[in-house]
Amino acid sequence: MTIWPGDNTVSVRDVFNIESDWEVPAFAKASEHVPAIDPDYYFDRQTTLAILAGFAHNRRVLVQGYHGTGKSTHIEQIAARLNWPCIRVNLDGQISRIDLIGKDGITVKEGKQITEFRPGIIPWSMERPVALVFDEYDAARPDVMFVIQRLLEQQGALTLLDQNRVIQPHPGFRLFATANTIGLGDSTGLYHGTQLINQGQMDRWNIATVLHYLPQHAEETIITQKIPALTRPNHHDVISKMVTMANLTREGFKQQHIASVMSTRTIISWAENYLIFADLEWAFCLSFLNKCDEVEQPIIAEYYQRCFGKELILPSTTPANVYA
Figure 1: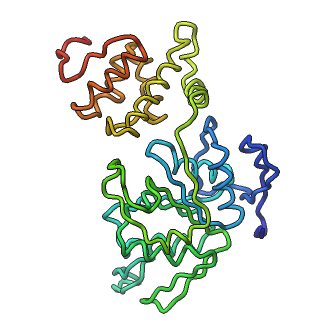
Figure 2: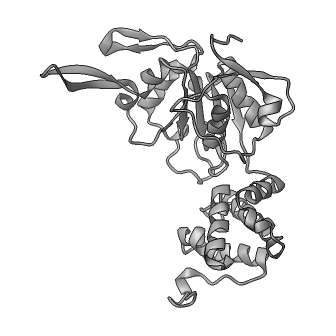
Figure 3: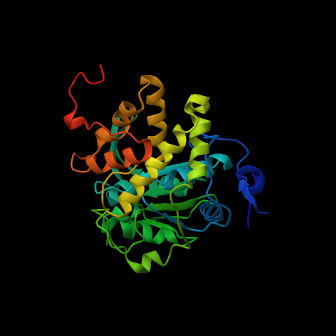
């Protein structure tokens, strides 16, 4: 493993609280593109080691999982602790090859208009010690996918035909991606718009890891740390029931009973709104239920009744002054 001059190393055991003897390269100081550290973030062992291998050994890492599992955040929080600049690009249907590679644009220099090449995010990142993360990798357009394919080789250079220039990757350039599927399309009906990915390209990803939803105890710990007010005696079992409620929506989502799912972020919003309004049920409606389709609200109300032993009043049948 090559570590470029001026960099440090960090202990995986000390920094990520994971049993491992790995020492991973890191930067001594944070720069403007280094993500902010979330001190309460929970690191899944297998996913963390897979992503760290990407940073330490320049492996191309694809993180797959359901939405709301924190795939992109996991990469960002590892980068934050390594002081590694990290840039995320969402590969929605509007992202084109030109957006990634760059294009000619008119600029003014010394009072004259001239045509000048403006690099896209890929050449900009390749020339810097940057971790480039492609979100929604399985939703990208085919022309975009073939641009990425050359980068998947460890020393993959990028040829700019318009510039007659070949860009060699900086020693600190890293490439990651997140996806809901694993490149075989959406057989479940949960993720419309995802694409089949060329298997020759999938083969170029050195590491593919799967991130699941957090274990109940880990998620309860995170909520407790984020919302310490809910640890008071009169709230002692609220967090446990909130996480149980979230897990029911996730299982319902997997079984295709509902199309909405509660993430850890949603639970935190629910808890914060509960403290604001002092009404757990209304806070739940404001934080999650009102975002759901009316067709699936009765199912979610059933989940709520199972967790809290109380029938949930659905927004579509609630008089305007019921919470006044």
